[in-house]
Image (cartoon, rainbow, N blue to C red):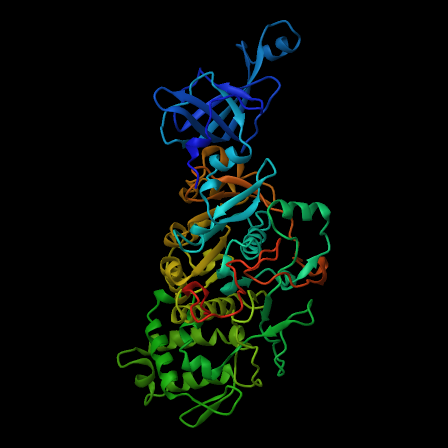
Length: 594
């Protein structure tokens, strides 16, 4: 990497300067002000640079981002003077002043810019220096800046090299959290930044927003040449996702195992768990996945009953049914009845609930268990023919969408908990080869700040240990203040869209400068503020309209598969110098399947 100081020069540039460092306000190495020329302007988020000669050291470049711009009449004393000045009665001059937050000093000699030094907009190489893009060996495009040029995040803080996890906050329906997360994943998959790791990089998305995400493999009918050009600026093709898999719960009451979807007729697999899997894998705790459950004594009964089911349940047939002590069970209702009978019988209660468990605790457990019948009846089955596609898995495609919108909230918790635990376990057994990005909306529902639950423990494990396993959490929520602190603090990349004013004042958004805290309450859809460790100031990003369909009304033709992962989308060349799908005996660890 070329040393930045060698690119810094105090010679005048061809680009005109827009103003000079202000002398009536203190200029510090971390913040300064710029008085603008009459025929120039600066807007919020513009990137500027100024250079001063330091005796004995040479030119020092100070770069920063505009965080505030003010305009005032110089020479006015009273508010009413504005009318006299406008009529030419009083002499005064309009002066605009931009506040600059320093992002980088090169070389690292922290001296203040000198008043009177010219300030210019940063473009090209200077802009890359100002925003640390020149130091990012692996850049992921996340959108465009105010100047229409790409904004990047450093992959090192996404893939676990130096950090991991992403937190996205914003008002529902306005902040476009899901759209931004999808664009981020698309940039990861199609920019070529992952190199050979792209072969085994997967994404798992839990969708609660209707059937909108069941058409990501279709071209958006609103795709036009202007949109294609926006993608091209970032080095991306404007195409739908090429490698996708879609899962939805089975249709209630249907004994053929059809998925419960209405707007997409093909390409969606129904998912469920057999009664044998439910007992063998001890999935009962995920039935009690609310935070309130952990505050009750009957959680002891939950684990005791789960262990008993694992020991006593044996397969009965080939459709997932079980038998316990010779009693056949084919539906979730029958399983609940069996557990109730075992806990109600004086002869079997102690073996199933524990020696010292009181009848009141047992009854509380049974009431809570019976309340799960309506929610989990369609998902835990022993009456459906075996289907090889019913298991939610990320193995056979790059992007996996699990549709939950037709399920009650309790069933949603069960699915998220079981799938995440299974994927975490599978990834842990396979090692760190490859990456798994897990996108979860309404994170505050699954990992609330108070209380504990099986799902929260899984998410905490991912947040604190997932980096070493290659499991990256993309958490989206309306209010980061209601999410477990350890999950937010472990997120290297923080993204904020439109926020409620009360939420914007919370300590969780302390990384936003005061001006940006006010601006996030006004941000329009498609504008996000992205904070990453290398850049001191969050950057305003506008990401383009999706090239893939986000609802059935936008779904055009089924997308044509683009170049496979690991292939440059522009040149078609294989990244890393070999076919990413051909296994070699000496393949590196990051290319091992998981």
